[in-house]
Length: 302
Image 1 (tube, rainbow, N blue to C red):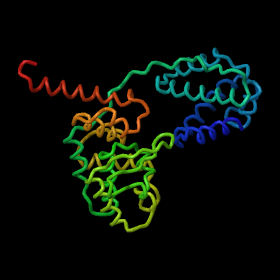
Image 2: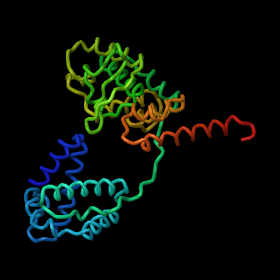
Image 3: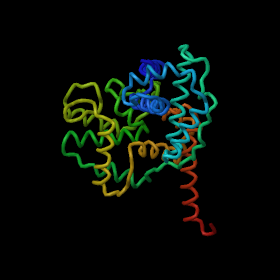
Image 4: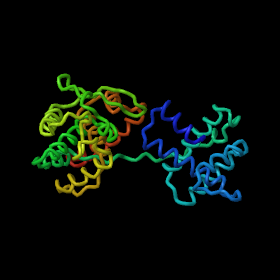
């Protein structure tokens, strides 16, 4: 069916993650349900029925229909980020329909994205990240895994999906580099510190299993992203930090500490795998806030 073909094309051409593909699929079906729900005998839970009926009427959908749909989302209290994602999905979907000859022009082409407020990312200070890492008590190979995993997070700034997908063949112990496959399966090389490499080696020695994924669960299967988040929650509690953080907080922390220590912004961009320098520049705001705070605290005439 048309939505399945669209999702398959995104996966093949863009290399989107399963999470992103699932979100696009849900968003497209939500729109189809909205557009077709007024029609008689339309079951919005019957995806095959929705797709067939939609193709019969796709050419009749207008820009105004999409604006009405978005207005409904606003009334329902959906965030600007949710609206932006819905618009992005619809633009991609209608572009696909144009490319495949189902419609002549995209009604979503000139739909503007909402202006998103730039939020300053949450980061840990040096004492907090050291407390998190130093309070991981290693008694079992699972503890050793946790230490190695979070040392790698802080040492490389990798995304949780990249940690999840990391294989042993991608870790160069001698060259102190890790080959990372990021968004869109884009490959990059990331330097990694000695502490992280030593922790990985110690963990794998205790694991004593020849498995491809670097980080595995107790059944020796690849550790899932949700499991990583749950493990981090437990580690934070045991460290007594009293913070609500996510694996992405460790990525933000890495980038901010690198910038604070004088790293070049372009180099940080390459390490993080950001397509645009403007994405990396958010960390300059974090560093400036910290610099101003230090100045206000230390300077007698501040």
